[in-house]
Image (cartoon, rainbow, N blue to C red; front, side):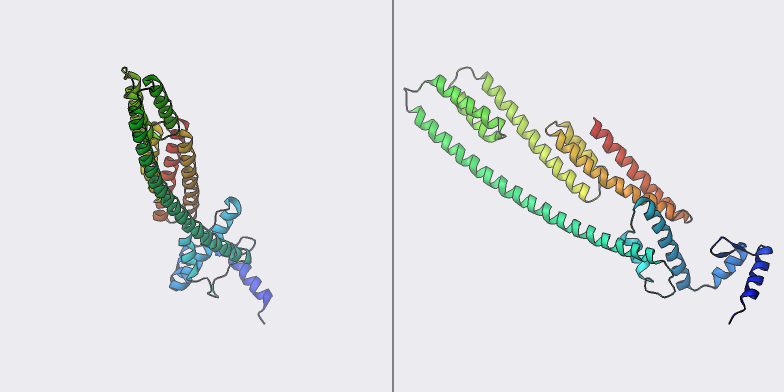
Length: 306
């Protein structure tokens, strides 16, 4: 059995000579030169295990404050030595690793589900567009048939025809059926000598139709860029879409969703920057990412406030 009193005596002597110091729980070397010599004698595996213990300990302490879990890159690094008996970590830290793994799996499931949902929405949109085109074509054929029949009936008043077609066109315009509305206005134009109002309405509809198509394309492209994490490009596309003033509420909602994603990434970058503060190159990298995400978040907020 080791002589406890002797050990304590030796430790006290080393502490008096300021070679080691006691922090309440552990003894530490006070001389960097001695610490370096000991570090030099460690194997690559031992150095990696010590580094992993620091990452887990620091990340766990950060988690207690910010609820930020380990990311996939950190978990992959830890996994190399996770079952190594030399890795000394607390039970709470092991539970923390387990929770982080579950979170990664959950995020992967959400990502896959999002892709499936987006694909389903795009498929439905394509099918709906095809149906709408067929409806528009049939409506046009019906209108043309009706026009031909009505033209043969001299007893029908031209003014009544004009009013009817004009009213139907306005209703179609209000319901977003721009092509059908234009066809109706064209028919109404045939029954009036003063075509100023009809031509003006047709011009307005064409402009609305062009802007709506442009708006939809910008929105679709912005969503794609955001999904690819090309946030700067996505912000510019959302800004252009918002300037068309077609559906500002929708734009602001999607901008806010993207801002939340960016703010989360900014928080993760800050944690990583803090964790790597003694590694200049990594710290600089994470700090740059944090600043970049912060600038993107501010840009989005500015567009939302406009």
